Length: 113
Length: 110
Image 1: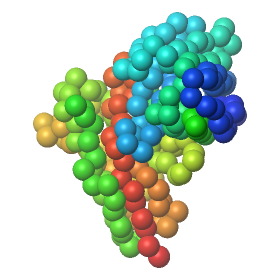
Image 2: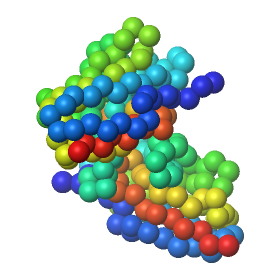
Image 3: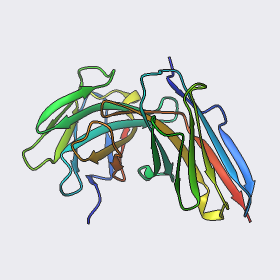
C-alpha cells in the first residue's frame, strides 16, 4: 500500500507571497492532519480534515488554511508569507477514528526569503 | 504551556544495551499515547502506541510503559542497534490532534 505523499518536497518563496502544499493520504484513510516543524517550536498541529470538513484546528493565524477534497486529498495554503513560516510541513493520514495512529508523509520543506 | 515534555534532548547508548526514553505529560484527559521515530528531512515513522487503559504494550524490541498516576510514559528499546539512532518523539492524542514532545535524539554506538 502506498504511503502518504506530499508535493512539492522543496519550495522557496519570498515574503508576501502565498503557497499551496498538497497531500495524498494512504488509500482508505479519510482523516488528514497537517503539522509544522521548526527547530524552535518542534512539531505543532495546524489542522485536521475529515470528510471535507475541518474537524480540529491548532493555534495558527488565519493566514494558514486548508481544505480536503472528496477523494480525501488535502491542500494547505499559507498566504502573505513571513520569514518565520520557513519550516518542514508534514501531512499525516489516519482512519476515521478520533484516536489512532497517524502516518506521516515525507514533508515539504518551505524556505521563505 | 507544554503539555507533553521530553526532558532529555539527547541519549547515548552502547549497541546491545537498553535504551530508555522518557516522556511526561500534564493533561490527565489524554487517553492515547504514541511514539514516533524521525530522521532528518523525513516525516515521523510510527513505532508503537498505548491506550490509557493499559500500562504496557510490546512490539518486538520496543515496549512502552504508561504510569498514569505519575503522568509518565517511557519507551524501552532492547537490544539497541545502530540503526535505531534517530530523534524519538512521544505524542499524546487528543481528539485526533497529536501533541508532541520536543524529542530526544538517540545515538546508539557500535
